[in-house]
Length: 288
View 1: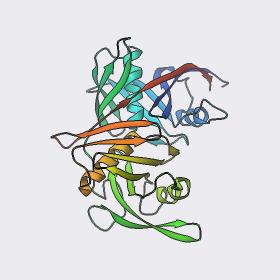
View 2: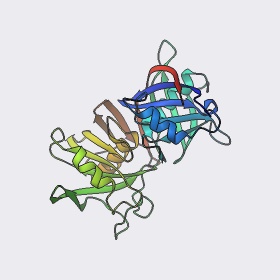
View 3: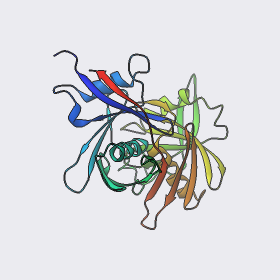
View 4: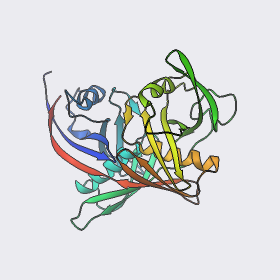
């Protein structure tokens, strides 16, 4: 078939970076999963935490977003990716209002963009929906209906490491784990065996959380299919939901990630609003 040119835009949300491609620009017969693997590689490709396909939607949504991990698998939802897609759509005139709806693998999400004096979006607030704690829906192989602050033995070298996890879904599965020393945590050692633990039949994203105050935490993230990333929007919301379920925070929480800070707040309807930056880095064409 030969190589074909594919336009792309590189974007990031608090350091969680993506290659954004319009669905209609995909060459016929090319596999998006294979393109995700190629474009995400930081030596042989553009370099990213995943590929975002964006296009106009039918029905109740204005846009459709499909997210591919760097390993070529799809994920139901990506919160930082949603912010980037919202900025891309507004700045590139796929939509015209500052509020619109995006179809994702986890349902339709409402977004509102904040536009600067130069007419470009610099921040996006997303309604990420209500967290799910029911083990069967997440899914988690836990014998009770919910798994909140429960013990988990994790293989770690020649011994086992005991952690406490709270399982929650924000359209994709998360295990939220409190720690005392985030800076010296060996995320690359603990992340993989938790992600692939038999407790999580669909694998899981992992968030390690150090509480700084009642309204502020710092986290590090091990993403399913991607490894350690600088940020994860659904993970940020999962942390907020877990801490609120523990009674460790109130109805708003600032979450510090490697790439910056994202604000979360609880709505009267029991949903989570997430607001943070979205940045366009550069555009170009790749051969696929």
